[in-house]
Image (cartoon, rainbow, N blue to C red; front, side, top):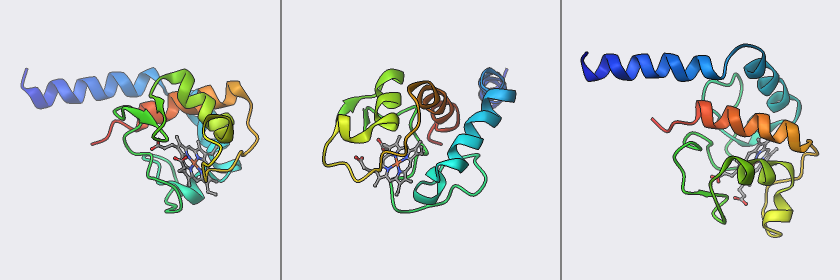
Amino acid sequence: MKPLLVLLALGVLLGCEFGGKDREAARTLLAQHGCGTCHVIPDTPGANGRTGPPLTAMARQAYVAGVLPNTREALARFIADPQAVDPRSAMPDVGITPDEARLLADYLYAVGSGS
Ligand code: HEC
């Protein structure tokens, strides 16, 4: 197969991994909590805010918020309680649960491959 085809096939596979209900649930949470008013988030309707950094490459970044090595748990922890991670963070605590934060972390990894 040509490299482009391999890439396309991979994209389809990764897309399926996080699809359907989870993706819809994540998008609903993002909309409810206004994440997209502050962040550009790929594949997410209406998420084009510029107050915070664009979340376009979360799957490839070395750090979360510049302070935590980028793992699923770290990303979820920051989303659920930014000030617990960095007291000076300008990101507000939007009041979501740890489970919801994990779902959003998975979503951000799925859409944020950084192309
Ligand atoms: C009022 C604006 C605002 C809202 C609403 C907001 N954020 Fe943020 N966010 C920020 C700012 C500002 C930063 C940068 C601060 C920092 O890195 O500590 C940030 C940082 C982040 C980061 C780290 C980015 C990186 O490059 O490491 C993630 C992930 C993130 N936000 C996700 C979310 C999610 C998910 C939501 C909704 C639950 C959300 N944000 C809601 C302003 C916001």
